[in-house]
Length: 342
Image (cartoon, rainbow, N blue to C red):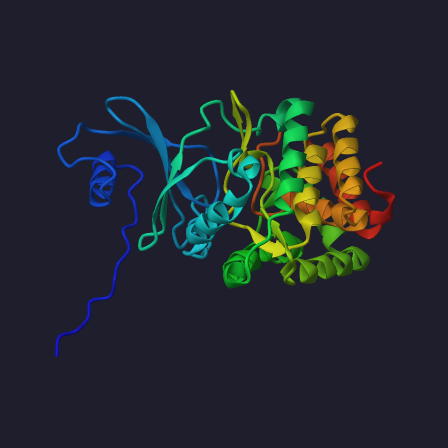
C-alpha cells in the first residue's frame, strides 16, 4: 500500500515576487505567461502577512495569509485557520450592504493555503496617525459607530455559529489582553520602551482589586454571546478612502458582548488623547444602543493597559508621565466603571 503524503501549505515568501507570481498562477488569478508583478507590504499589521500586489498593466489587490505564527512576533504561535474565520465574517455581513460596502470586497478564498484575495481600498492609509496628532475626524467616528450598530443586528444562522466561536483566536487575544501584561515574570523589558514604565506596570499588576476585576472581564470575554463582534476595532483596522472609512481585519471576530468593540474604540481614542467630544459620542452611541456602560468602560480600561504594558505596542510618543496617567485611567475604568470616561 502506498503512503499518503501529508499536505504542505504554501507559505508565501514576502520577499519574492516570483514566488507570489507562481502562487497566483497556481490559483488561476493571473496568466502563466503574463507580465511580472510587483509586491509591497500593505500596512504595518501585527498578525498577518498582507501584500499589495500590482499588475504590470495597472491595478492592485491585497493578498493576505495568516500563518501559524504572529507575523510581527514570529516566536508567538497563532491559529492558522484565522483567515478562514475572516472569510466567514465577510460572508456573514453580506446580508447588510451598508456593512459590506464599508469593507473591502472578498475576491477569492484559497481555503487549502489559508489565503484571501481582497480589494485594495487603503491607498490613503489607516488611522494610526491619531496617536500623534489626536485628530479623529468626527464624521469618520460617526461612520465607525454606525458600522458597529449595524454589525450588532447581523443574525448569524445556527449552522454557521460554530465558525464564530473562534476559540483559538479568542484565547490568544485573551492571553495578551487580560493575563500576560499583568504577569510580573513575562520577560518584557518595558524600560527599554519608556524608562520607568516597569515600575508603573508593577504598581498596577500588584493591585489585587484591579487584577480581580481584569480576570472577571477576561472570563466574560471568553464566554459565548449572541452578537457578532469585530474583535480588533482599533485605528489600524480603519482605512481612509475617498468614499469614507473602510473596516478591515476581522479575524478576531466572535459572538460575544457588543460592548467589547465599543470599549476597544473608546480605549484608543483615550490613548490618542482625542477631543473629549469624541468620547462623548461613543458614550452617547452606547447609551442609544442600550449597551452596558460599565462593560464598555471595563473593556476600554483593559485595552489601555495591554497596549501600554503588553506585547502589542502602539507607535506612541508618550512619555512616562502620560503613560502613568493612562494606567491610572485604566484602573479607574476597570475598578470604577460606573464613573465612565469623565
